Amino acid sequence: MRDGGATPEDTATDEAAERSGVRFARLRKHRLLTSAAVLALLAAGTAVPLVLSDSGEDRPCRRIPAPTRALAEDPAAATRALDPGDDLSRYPAVRDLLSHDGLCGDDAEALGEVIEAATRAPGPGAPHTVAQARAAYAVVAALSWADVPDGMAPSVARVLADYVVDEARYLSASSSAALPVASPELAEPDKEGHSRYGRFLAPGEAHVDFEYHDPVADAEPEPEHLVSELAGNPEAFAILYDAERAYFAHYLERLTREGGDPAARSSATVWPDNDVEDIAQRVGALMQHRAEHTKEGRIPDLAAFDEAVRRHTRGAYEAAPRQLTTRPPMGDIADRPVSGPLRGDLTDGRHQLLTVLDAWAEDRGVPEGRAEVMRQIVDDAYLRGVWLRVL
Image 1 (tube, rainbow, N blue to C red):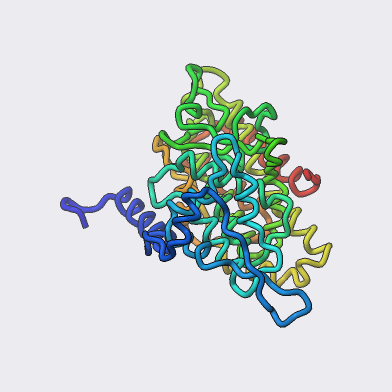
Image 2: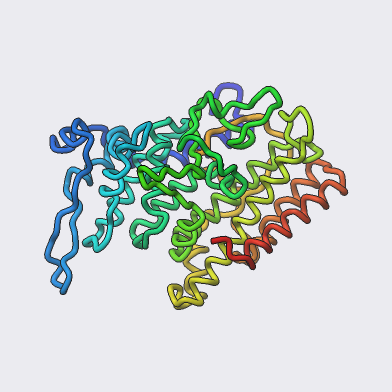
């Protein structure tokens, strides 16, 4: 306890740091590479190829070389290896490095750990760098249309969760993106208090623009399709579901009592309505993907799948009863402490969202008319996500 006693805010901060400490322990464990080959690789700016191994079956499996595995223990080196560069000139090499067809044993999981090390923030309070964001762009572009192995799926889901603001705004983003990544300076709000990269952005953080497609490098990230693929894995599903619900609570608690953006100079509720709509639609889409995977047979036992999702789900996320002015980086949003166990039907995402919204509106004294508008936005958007195929 600090001198003078700990406040509730102090306790929450300590809990968040403790939770995040578990998350980042592996990334801090070893800071030096164990293979000189990795250093040579990075100096040359080339990818580490996979090597064939006899799996005992008709088709040989492929092993990840030791230098590639070692990247998981050095996040800075992993970022350099997966960073496609300003002009995406290294994207083909990154795509080759992430090739994962027919991997042996736990190699898919190991490759997932490399992806996490390269793209995720190194600890609580740390914003993503431009290089990390470019690596995340390359990962999503390389895997958007791939059959992601189950061993790799949770790691890829954690990357999307770590960039939840960028991934969530994809539905309403402009198709005229000029760059794959926005620098912190480019993402800053304009004089009207608006940034096309979202609301309540952390200072000094780079943002991925998944709308950017580069035909020369053949880089076309489609995070919505990648989410659809990942949703067939129960742990990945839980990670993505947790991230969206955590972001929903995070977003609400920064709005004004009227449900508006406190930084907006005019039309304060327009962008909040759009953002809340996107979050609700994405939660609905997760349920739609679950249904599609069940129909197609990838989820052979729906009850067992849902039970596994509940085991991996961290819990419920309630919005603070007062307006918050902090601007945490994206990596801290999905990693926020839960407010308690998840109650009710796990797969009724509309109920899970509206329960949080109603509690927030009551705590903040939101005018009933405004609260009802927001409820309707959530309801409509969730149903669109459930019933409409957006791919």
